[in-house]
Amino acid sequence: MNNAAPPRAPANAKRQDILETALRLFQTNGYQAVGINCVIEESGVAKMTMYKYFASKDALIEAVLQERDTRFRQALEQFVARFPDPPQRLRAVFLWHHRWFCEPTFHGCMFINAAVEFPDPGHPARQVALTHKTWLKTYVGALLAALLTTKVAERLALQCARLLDGATVAAQLSGDPAAAFLAWNAVVSLLRQEGVAIEPGEAFDDVAG
Image 1 (cartoon, helix red, strand yellow):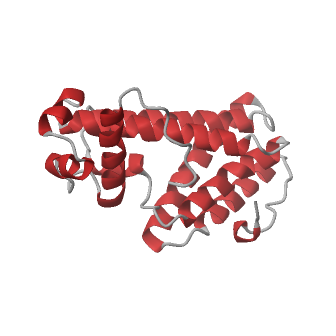
Image 2 (image 1 turned 180 degrees about the vertical axis):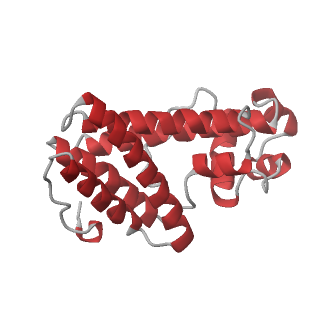
């Protein structure tokens, strides 16, 4: 994922190799379709080494999602921080998603995919997915709070989070990254209803930098 923050310096190289391999395989092929032996073979470690660091496949999936969550947060926050004012920072969240959708390695959201593959609310993968989505809503809410009252910002944050999820699924299904700009246009309309008049700006395909 080119838009993600680089891997952190590994405390243990073999554990990190397993994480990197599993992240790539799960992202590309899904969780159920990738067996633990495939991860072992692709990462070039012994089975004993795998189970030294991850007691089960579920534990590995949980660790992979936590790693993805950390990188996602860092990358999005660093990108948004480049923009000088509140409307631009909010727009940058959707622009960042557009650029993610354009990447050749984009296979949808690992957290949405995990929620689909693991419907049990108690499954650790689903719990990490919920934590991630809650963080994203809170993060967008903080950006909205610079434009609106706290109560309205909280309400619109949930709508924005749903629009981002919908755009992500649409981009995965259609291969068209324009879903991010369509979602941003919907946010602009919601803001106007609250008395915040901002322009959507040029289409993301035309945005350089």
